[in-house]
Length: 322
Image (cartoon, rainbow, N blue to C red; front, top):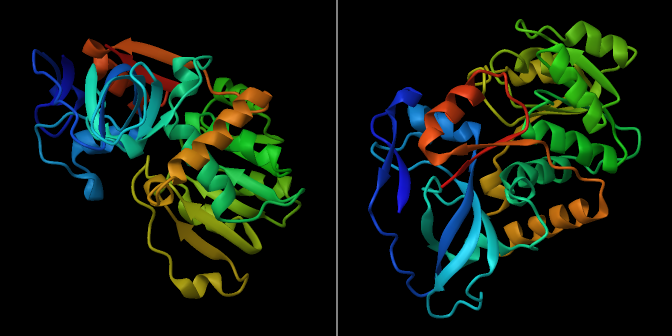
């Protein structure tokens, strides 16, 4: 079996490929899966660095999502051998085989490509689009980092629900990606993250009803300032560092609100991940949900995948193949 190991917390140079260890046989309620593809997410970067609440002692195998086929099943598991499945929130997914609880997986159609079958980003987009506001046609919504994998999917989901969407990004090339995802307007905030003046101009001074901020430190304060009366800013990422504290008194004049969340909180109940996955698969089948382009790396090049996602020069999905 192959697996990637974080030998010490820090940079991508601490990622190493190991071979030889065998995956554990599945116990009751578990499945052993041969991994077809393992998704690379920014959360993996935080785990590798040992950042904040994401700290995990080294050595460990990173990766939280994947797609593969059931090789063996423990007692009480109804999934057939050979069933194609996807999972998220299973630590150690950077491996060629993985044993996991059967209730963490969802069966997949054979028609899905690996890029379509990796569900972490789409599940994140689904909970963001559905849990914080009942989107009505014409609602104004801001999506930061809209050229990223989650960003592109969130733009599509919001447009499907009828929202007017403005996406931010850091380059002209990425702006075209955001437009292709369906955004009504795009702000290129470059490397200095300046967007508030243009946002207020685009909304005729009203601001937005809902804002999703996955950037954090560099954008959250102006994001809150860009809310309309009664609007909500959702902190859903920290790619530039944690969002700063905001005095609640600063929100009272416009009755604005701040929220935060994690996809893991919204798949914690039994069957919740499976229900969200079903909506995603329906969207793909109907044709309105288009998964972002994806780039595959051999598992031995996990460090390169981490460098590339940290560089902010990529868009779409990155994944590892054994």
